[in-house]
Image 1: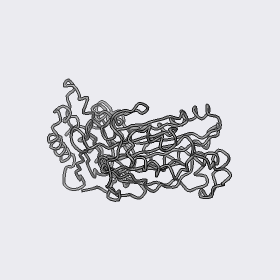
Image 2: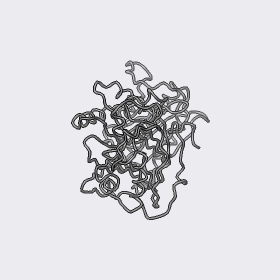
Image 3: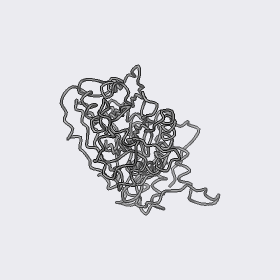
Image 4: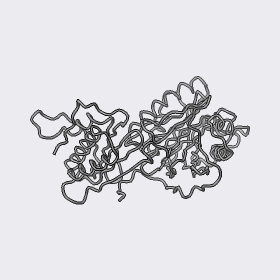
Length: 414
């Protein structure tokens, strides 16, 4: 049963069925190109990242997010001085990374960064796309600040540019608009998210010259370069056409879009994981007696079925027991347990109805409780909490490639 605690917040979901599946296979190759770089997904096998950056004012990357999700970022700084633009791009990249550590929805993240850029001592603007991929639902939720939208490729050959939500470049957009928009699209298994940012866009000069227009659709023709630079709206269709023409390399896509000056990020969701497709199993905890005991037994059975090493299995069962007990004590009630396995890790999430985030504390020597999160931190690779509709989810991750040694016994609390 799917819980009401869905991972997506806001936006309209475009179902995978809406993406036509005809034509030749579309997707970047897994091998690195001469000018690109193939990288594993951040700490997981869920996404395979390939990127190409040819402009020092631009960057793109994948960042780890809460509970096994991945943040995809692509940006470029607008500034008159190229040297200053390069330096500002590095600074803004660090600010985006810091923002990614806070579990914000894409539109919220852009709103925060927009205010940060608007108050920067050195005036500039920036184009940015910020999206979160959740492998549980195969959903990609994104927002853009004057950045071309993504292209979604299906494993059977389609390349579609979904509708792009409203948003002007960072640096004062929220002062003339309510907020940035959000869009959520479904990524089919085996599909790829492709994002491209040309080195120049037709309206770059307009945003360098003055404030954001109150009506973004009203463009001063005298401030738009009518030369070879494409418009923001034209980039994603050009990328889709290049992919349908058989291009697979980020450098080749960059050449097709803007003569080689584009920054290109491709995030593929492979189906050939060593354990098969990503497995998600959930247990409703709001019904029945003794949720902690039921969660422990359920977890033990699932992990045994997945044939995990006993030491790793026992660590995960211990963490589940502590997280469910904490949800009962401090979260009002434990609502749901979710286990997700991919090629390299297992993610545990426990949902409750208390919006306040957990805070680890040091228990007194004679205290009978208060050590749950300490134990979770001890056995898990990472842990944290994120807001979800109706409450929060406390999560932890276990790396299957680096199991715990046998001299660290795990003891689940009753």
